[in-house]
Image (cartoon, rainbow, N blue to C red; front, side, top):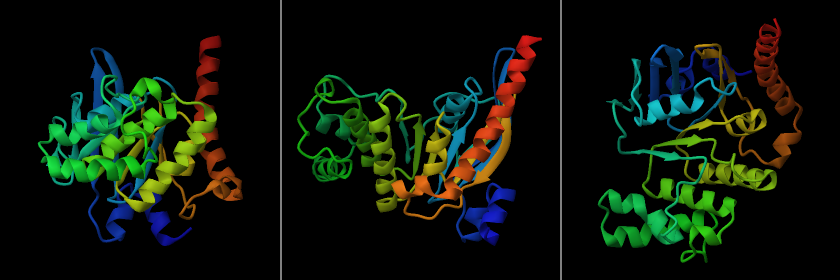
Length: 278
């Protein structure tokens, strides 16, 4: 392990600081509860300008809630979120979210769905006409500009949702289990498509997933949430080389890292089962 990797494992913000750039996202002491139910507490981590951080944890640990707090869609009860130097209290410019269930407007074509964010931001028509075809092509949907969501597969719909998010030029991309609603084959295709797109246009990304394999494949670091209320149990540095391809899945180091994250989560699952049996 390199000195950078060691430091990054010890300190969530070390990678960005050692590389000479400030973190793009800073989450400090974040806490959230619904009435008497405390969802998570004391969540602290940074994300570098060109870094993918994956978040995994047991069902119900608050992964999606955490992501929505970071996006400003729901209020948190303690701590703070900074994107650059701006404190998040509501959705802000430069942050885009990709949801699990596509979120497309069924009455709009691919072109109009991708153009939606730009139109809402008040982009001039000339800019929309230039950018929308560029991002439709980037996600592999060239030729389907006039198709409606009902005419497309789930994978194509998710590509459209990704193009819509990317078209606004975000410096932060938040992804909430974006491939969970598609079949296994399509999911694998989309994972490598996302990696290809990130290599072309790297940005800060937080990727929430239930899949350990997906987290290890995509992430530079994997944050493991555990407990009730949940907190960060471990931040695993993923020291796999880039670009990552299907060959990455066959590397011994990939299997080691997947097992490390998996065993961490499984210990809690077994403990919870034992408590229920008693």
